[in-house]
Amino acid sequence: MITTNPFSELSEFIAPLTMQIYVILMVLMVVGGTILDTVHKKSAKYFFENSKKAQKNAKHSVSSGEKASLALKTVANEVLTSGEFSNVQRRISHLFIMYGFIFFVVATAILIFAYPTPATPAPTALPLLWHLGALMVCFGGYWFWFFIRVDVSAEGYPWYRLSRADLFIVSLLATTTFALIWSALQAASVAGWETLFFVLFITASTVLFSTVLWSKFAHMFFKPAAAFQKRVTKADGSRENLPELADRNNPADRDRHSMELLKDAPMDMGLGIKREAPRHY
Ligand code: HEM
Image 1 (cartoon, protein in one colour):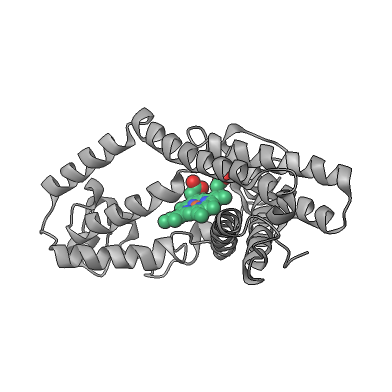
Image 2 (tube, rainbow, N blue to C red):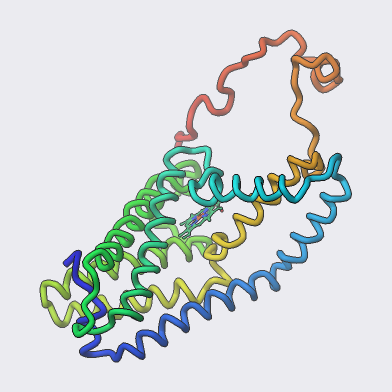
């Protein structure tokens, strides 16, 4: 099953052109949803106004060379390795979900456009990538859903409580889960169930790609820009109007009124609120 192209068998019932039009429609929905999201939340306007404000408050200018280096650091850290997550489990789960989704989407597009029928057999690596991607999303996603997300790990809500904020993760998990079940049933030639799970797979994927305006889908495009801007505000000293981090080794900081109580405190005061995870429900 894992090395079989599920779309090639499907071409007996659904024309490859129909599948290709569906993929194009989904891409257009994501592009349209992201643009509408930007307009609706005025996020682009806010982003540019904020960056202008930061430029005004800048203590030193950042050269284009420095900006290029900050962009590279953003790609290497926040984008490619989910460096914004300080919780290691969340970071690993996000890496599985992110790379799994990329593998799954890229493999789907290549299989449907380049190898749509049994007459055009796909190299084994592609269906393998499709299945592996779906499995990675399921692994990272169910781990996140049942154990890691704040609602269950810190707020004490049961895993089955749903809210609109869950639209993205739920439709993403439904898409990859139903895709895998559909492919397994296809390999086992269980006709009726196979059709049912194919319909569920397409329904879930349509929900995933058509609800960008209301879900967290577009964060994958916005977060890199926000992470880059954050690095710039640190480099130019504007620091989003936040004060410099206090350093008690520095006498000027130590003698500030707000630091009075801490004057004689030891430099290392332990883990503080990180001492224990919130699990008292
Ligand atoms: C294929 C691309 C990606 C996928 C499938 C993906 C998936 C996810 C999922 C499922 C969540 C949890 C959402 C929830 O709370 O329901 C999440 C959160 C997050 N993602 Fe991604 N992500 C992707 C790309 C990115 C990129 C490129 C970045 C950063 C540059 C990023 C940064 C974050 C951050 C910081 C959070 C936590 C913030 C929050 O809870 O609102 N993600 N992502």
